[in-house]
Length: 260
Image (cartoon, rainbow, N blue to C red):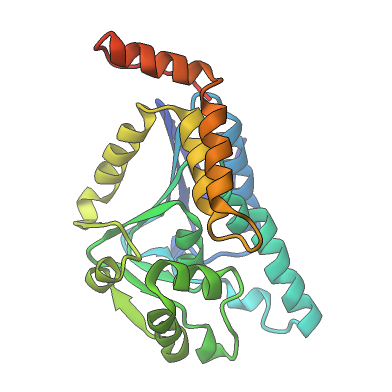
């Protein structure tokens, strides 16, 4: 499948999706959101793909926000629909995906760009990265999960400060806050992220997808995450991956898990 605003590259068990709108600093528009959904969905369905990496083209920006020109004249009802559709098709979709998704943040991750990164299962940033939610400077609030995921990751006080000041933090501060897992040099970003992905690909995809579901359950209102964990733990015992993993351990060899 061909795309206009993204690039999709598959190497072994890793699919890398690059947002490719460098003249717009990779800003998200409707077409990009739709293409990201399609590429992520296709990668998730691909039995050989065990990890997805999302990054931006060039060295300036991961995603420098949403394409404001698309919604500057929207009504309140249209704005609500924009956010709801974005949550369903991309941001919540990524968070709940069974395949691990890593954000490789190369430069600016602002507004919808930071929200995209936060929807991923974890984040690696280049040392020139700048992260922020500037929506209040436009008379808006974050609409793609920023008011929910940012406090979950860095705490209520720090999140409210970032949102209310509309300011940016650098990669070092983001690492200190726990917003990103690692900070590396720009030229090492993809290779480092791929090395993390390689470590994931050697483990059970079935167990990892079950772990994602259990961890996410802790942040869902009205859901007992402990019960989800107990159920998932039990379900793992009935899988071929469990049989292979335990057999390999007892035979003192590396497990050879099948695809998804």
